Image (tube, rainbow, N blue to C red; front, side):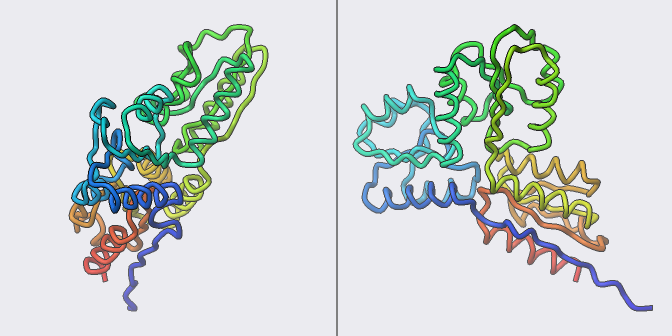
Length: 285
């Protein structure tokens, strides 16, 4: 009997997205000119990249006061307007590396607030991108993480606008939007502000989960878009393992698999993904 050869199927969307590439390039450029360079919070949600930049001199701060006299690169998730204003007062130079998709959400929210809309954000309240949007949207902003959260909402006869955290699962966003439309608001506006790159990765993850028995999702444990990829693969029926590097890969997960899919988050370096693929090959081929 002919032996079945296991397959390793790697997603097409691997490595950094445009926004992450831009943020890292900005940080490296500032570091080449200034030793005292910082970011308010991790520049992206990947521990290996943050550590690499830290060795080059990028200091991650949690208090804006620690930015005094330093250069700052504003992380890809953006920061609230009040913090940006203080950064302009404290810092000698600033490069705003906010992802263009996040900046677009900022503009939409600012316009909607001026037009008198009550604003709802589909996303995670503690995520830095959402925290900035909450400040811009004003008091009473709704943050909806999952469909069941809508049960707590007491609708009023006012105008409601919904936007999405750029890294949320599109399926969850659609569920939230459909549930909100069943409430009794006087007017609705819905903006699909999810990043195109994120949507592409989610579609690939869904397809790979159907095609393979096992999927390894590579990316930071604190990365929202990577966590959503893992959720999508689990819902698709595949045995799913969210890992940050090849060191975390347990041979038992893949040893007997007929096929293994590999997907990665938008802030995961391509070389880390390739090391995961290589380790899987060494185990199953």
